[in-house]
View (cartoon, rainbow, N blue to C red):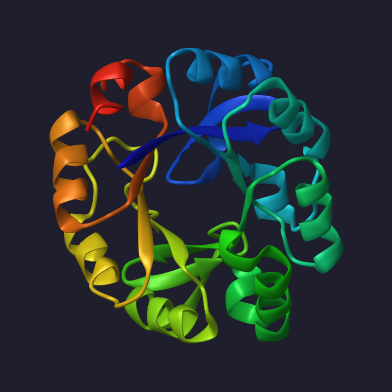
Length: 235
């Protein structure tokens, strides 16, 4: 299983938010490149990056930082936040991003999803961000009427191979992962799942692997040392 250290970028800095709330922010690195180099130096196999301004505002504002990260490390990076047009998608690919992550647009614009799948082939990832069982969009500000499970099944039917599943209520809280919700998504045939949100311990990561996820994303618990990265990276 792959452990993805999370680098969330807001106003050019590496931060963590509590439950995705823009006003509840903690800065960990003034330069996200320093965070990326640190994780690669400690043995990370890949890095998960979110352009928070892109997620909130639908407009990419951290491309220069993402490109700098891609050029400064040799490991793959996957990036989400604000990819709502083919132009935005190509901009990320041109920056050296290996796996773009669609969020809102995958749910609201089926034509765009199909075109993005054609461009990225098997490297496109879709984020399933769930709050109280329903998929959230627009930087987690609004909630749709579709369940995470139904959205996952729909994505598989369109050709999506990998999703990131996040329980928003757990994100940045260190409350523990939503294992039941994760289990439901992992039960969808033909899809690989990367778990995210609330991971707080090695035990969480072991359980996530046992459920069948191919990867896990951790932010706060890694940055504050609650989870030892080197130990978790061996699971």
